[in-house]
Amino acid sequence: MNNKTASYEVNFDGLVGPTHNYAGLSYGNVASVNNADAISNPKQAALQGLAKMKAMHEMGLKQGIFAPHARPDINALRRLGFTGNDTQVINKVAKESVVLLRAVYSASAMWTANAATVSPSLDTKDSKVHFTSANLNNKFHRSLEPHTTTSLLKAMFKNDDYFVHHTHLPEQPFFGDEGAANHTRLCDDHASKGLELFVYGTSSLDSRIVSPSKFPARQSLEASQAIARLHDLNEGQALFLQQNPDVIDQGVFHNDVIAVGNENVLLCHEQAFLNQTNALEVVKHAYVGEKEMHIIQVPTDMVSVDDAVRSYLFNSQLVTLPDASMMLVAPQECKNNARVNKYIDYMLSANNPVKEVKYFDLKQSMQNGGGPACLRLRVALNDNELNAINPDVMMNADKFDTLTNWVNKHYRDKLTDKDLADPQLMNESYTALDELTKLLSLGSVYQFQR
Ligand SMILES: NCCC[C@H](NC(=O)CCC(=O)O)C(=O)O
Image 1 (cartoon, helix red, strand yellow):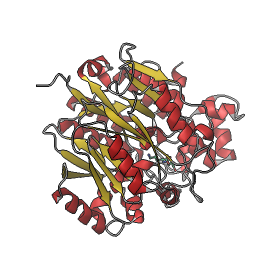
Image 2 (cartoon, rainbow, N blue to C red; image 1 turned 45 degrees about the horizontal axis):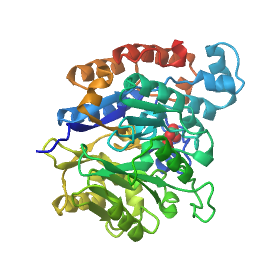
Image 3 (cartoon, protein in one colour; image 1 turned 180 degrees about the vertical axis):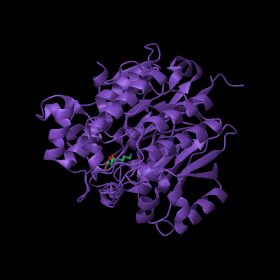
């Protein structure tokens, strides 16, 4: 017998918003840049995401829903000097700059791995769950997210006895913060304290720390340290590691494109971290659990960094099933890549807890550089905390049907720049979101509702 209360890892997936489009906004993210002028399919994108959420729920996992943000972001345009009523603002920006139009219409909040960093109560000194929204200041379209993210988190985790919400870090690259995509937690199981791994790409203060030379490092060490401080983590439960700058230059813009952790397993490419042999020794030494830690390092001669970036193998979710075995929730692209596929077969037969793989078609998100793991924010909760969250943001069979109907009713099949320039899309989008806030009992979280 042990005295642990039941605990769960709950995945909160971003519901893809009605204006999902391909804008080529993320320099350093190969898929985003390569698909800059592709035509998007918002309805299909949202349905692909919902299918994953439903499947996770049906596997016996706890699955939550993270609402999209209101787009276009008219307020951002007003700050940039566009005046008049909302329709006039859209007409003006459409004439002036299609790139700006695409940016304020971006549905990028779907990638909730970048929404926030979350520290479970097992890791914090006040035994509460701490949330800090990411400032995402490296890209203009993503820098529009933190305020609404915080409002949504407060509407989902609305109980001061259990949840603490911090303001996002100062909106400056010095404290560039990309949320949970650069944060993972290693522990014996979700009911045990964990070692929180913060992975940074550069330092704003220490010039001795090497940085990538081509693409930007989005996460700074100073941001990671600030989050650990804000969350007031227990002694010995935070560790800072540097991502390998060479892989950032090959398109690994977030650490979750090259490594994923779950419980006592860390799956990573052999080039993921700077001075990797030493870095992994440090991780093993710092591990706070009692179980054996499994570090699964994927060698370059089996899967190149290029294959990792194309297939998003490491952006799979690694989840613990109710029978305690682990499953890799991988994008379809991993099945289609012969080398990656072969590696997955090899991994499943090797001596580690990962026993199964399930593939999902998330092509609409993948074409913008977002795989299964990008689409979810992990929140480890005990029973009391789970009971304290807004129950209407949890996935179940009814909710799936309701949301599927909602998507089918409001979303367009495809979006081009012409659609973005049409003020009717704005009205459709706001109408849909207004209805969604009722379906998920979120209250008036959006600016246009106030
Ligand atoms: N975790 C995955 C994030 C992907 C996201 N892509 C984008 O924003 C692409 C948007 C566009 O180009 O339309 C990013 O790079 O932050």
